[in-house]
Image (cartoon, rainbow, N blue to C red; front, top):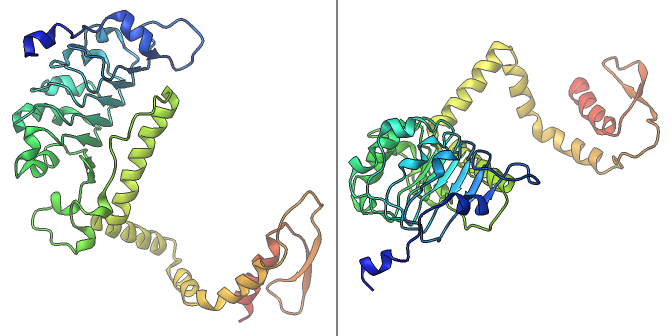
Length: 310
């Protein structure tokens, strides 16, 4: 079967098709194109995205594995958070002005398309809050400088294809130990998990989970962020004049371990019983005060008394 014969089986995206496969944020009422928040039209032999200009509330749009070549009709879907266009026939993405509209777009899947040069995707630089992008399995991804060009063109980007972006990909000449090198297992992340036909709220939670995973990996394996965290912590402790207290606690942490183990081994479970009166030594060695204790007071006061009196 040649291309002309295959085109006879391609379908146009109609309003009724969108309504049939669209979801509302709150089910139970009749759907309209303006109120649909999620559309799942993967593997429908679509040749265009007609009628999507009416989907003004759309947040998640899954159009994977079709035959789409032009996505201009999506320009009015300014509330998109996730857009999956993987496995289509796109060769040229729209310009910067198109992507500027998508201020909430965080996750964009474009892998397995036909973009071949940087100029075909340069418009993505206008997307202000794009955190995760897939462009693997495209002719562009076969170029040697592919990651370097994409990473340094999209300032908000945190993850590209299957890996979180490493510091050495951003800072030229930055020499790092193997733990922090680019495209290592430590930086691996799945930006296109298998679809399970989940409802809208679950899909939104999945997007949040992916972004959170990216942030966690960056916090652990980005030397720049690690250094910033320690500097901010030091300056905060210095401002509050608690540096010596924190250091004192760390020095004596090993000494406290037996006390903590002894206290937590006792019955510290809480119940519906009324709190008992617990007599504990506080500050003055020669005086005792009655304190209405909660379930955690037993081990807490043991630790505090140990710190005060030793």
